[in-house]
Length: 313
Ligand SMILES: C[S@@+](CC[C@H](N)C(=O)[O-])C[C@H]1O[C@@H](n2cnc3c(N)ncnc32)[C@H](O)[C@@H]1O
Image (cartoon, rainbow, N blue to C red; front, side):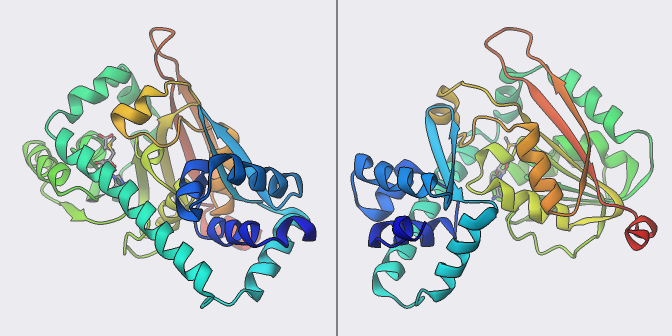
């Protein structure tokens, strides 16, 4: 492990992965090194248990090992690194540029497609079926605050807002929010607040919502685990988080044509993120596509333990 970490480029890679989960190509851009060289370094780091490799369609992502001796050693090494080290500071700047480019491209895509969004969505799945399943998962209960993160054109808000006394929809795209404003107005949801904001830092108070929804957002994000953590933070004791996204798939064209970053998520991955955020995964419904080429939609429901249960535990 020490041999793997004790080489300048590999040390730089560890410092970068401590900040973000990254694809091989992104690491090549930041390190300004060729793909074969970077891949060789990553192989050594993965074999030593310092980083974790996870293939996602034709891409491969890397992050620091989740736990174990490799993670402990990586954390310990990273605390010894001088944050002002010029090489690492330069990598940090390049990484910020890569992250900005990534979100600018995604934002431009959403701005371009805001008006056509509902049409684009229906290319993937039978929307009515998904919405019926979401309704079933939420049930008839009356909700206090409903928060929808990555609200887009306001579909979740109009679907579930009638059950809540207050709704907040948050999105990074002003164009999407403009359309959501019209849609929630038409649905008569007067108590709906639409905010311009980032799912990674919502600015909302902790444990404030009875229901938080994240519908078809995670696969666009650079760090979906961090988004799940922030979404979970908002869930009140006894409240729920609903994540709707795709099961793992191989439709690479969604990356080039529709800005998808991740090709779906496994139950294991989502379950692990939820558990780390203090929530319990309760159900994982799967809606298979009508044709073989389609996408399976997943609906994961998780709950924050009620206070009495938490205290008893
Ligand atoms: C595929 S749309 C889904 C919208 C809506 N949830 C729906 O299903 O109709 C994804 C939305 O996530 C938003 N989004 C992407 N990155 C975001 C971020 N970092 N913070 C907040 N919203 C984001 C986009 O602007 C877009 O409106």
